[in-house]
Image 1 (cartoon, rainbow, N blue to C red):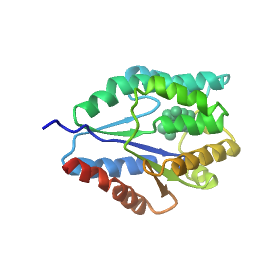
Image 2: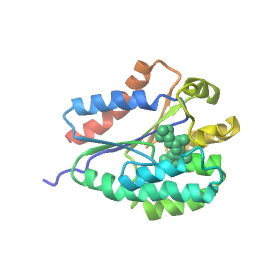
Image 3: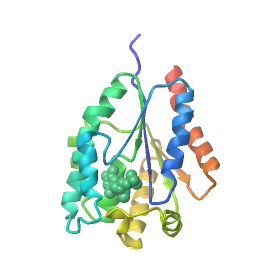
Image 4: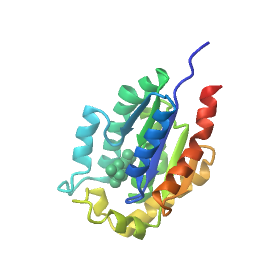
Length: 213
Ligand code: TMP
C-alpha cells in the first residue's frame, strides 16, 4: 500500500490573537496521537528564511517598498516549501505552520494594496502547488488584539502600522475564509484559550480520520 502523504495545517490571525498559545496546545495534541510533526513558521523556518525574517520585520528598516516586502515573504516561502514542507509531507509527517500564503494575501494584498492577481501569480510560482489541508484563522477585533499584544516588547516593523491597516488585514483574512470554507475554519479568538484549543482540535478531527483510512 502506498503511504499517504502527511497533513499540512496552517495557522493565521492578527496581532494578539493567541497563535503561540494555540500552537503549543495543537502540537501537544497532534504529537499525542503518535504523529510525527514538523512545526515551522513564516517568514522564517529555514536559515535563509530566518535571515529574511530579520530584515523584513526589522523596525529600523523604514523604507521597505510594498513590492520588496511581498517578494521577501515569497522568497522565504519558496525556500520553506522546498527545504521543509514538501519533504516532510512526502515522508508522511504532518506540518504545522505558523502562517503561510494567506498571510501574504491579507497583509501585502489587503493591508498594502498589492494586487491579489500578482500574489496569486507568485503563489503558483513559489508554492509548488502546496495548499494547506486545513487553515485555522484566529479572528479577533483589531482593538482587542492590539490591547493584548501591547507590552510584549518591541513591536516589529509591520506591528507599527495603524489600526486601519490591521482592519484591512482582518477583512482580507475573513474574505478568504468565506471564499474557501472547505479549507478554512474561522475561530473566535476572543474566547478563553481552552475554548479556542477545543475548537481547533474539533476542526482537526477529519484529518485524523483520513489518516486512519
Ligand atoms: P508573527 O508570525 O510573529 O505574527 O510575525 C510575522 C509578521 O509578518 C506578522 O506581522 C505578519 C507578517 N507577515 C506578512 O506580512 N506577510 C506574510 O506573508 C507573512 C507570512 C507574515
